Length: 224
Image (cartoon, rainbow, N blue to C red; front, side, top):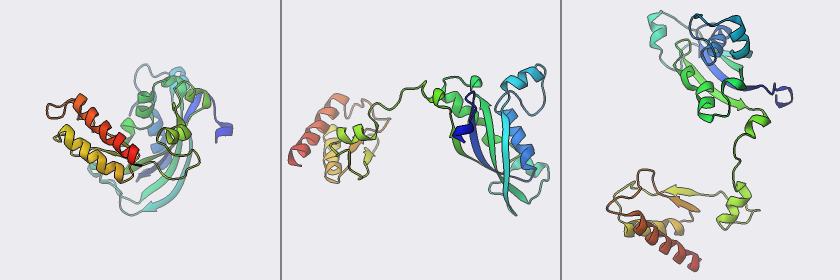
């Protein structure tokens, strides 16, 4: 796919399930996530659609099942019945619709699609982006080899890096947090982080917590 990819577009692959014609549903998906909606509206000219509309690249029907994967109230109101047809769908989107914006990219390839009444199941399988689009964003600062080096592993090591988050989320004192870190170090954990809701609580101020944690980490380093 990469060799024939249009550099002005990105591609998303989906698995869908529907009692309708999968090609019809794919067209709904393409319109919903680009310039269209469930009906043609004023201002949605052919020129605009040519420039901004997502395009169905392929639909590959794979199997049918008797029962839906998920219940669908809209289909029930329409008295729709199976069989429920499953298909792989590929859709291409204009890069200009999104720009260098990862939240908009995520909302475009997913977002409202999972609310479509036409489907009883949908999964985003893969996303293909041109190289020039990816280059707009910072790459990882350290990569796999650098991360292993920072954690004291050899770059040739094949052992997985293991991380964990302090639990309970909040409530532990600084000393109790340090004691738990000692146990985690001895268990072989490579990195440890606070839970996102634990910032600077009264019972374990950040300054005290850092001091207690690093004292235990350095003691374990000396011992190991």
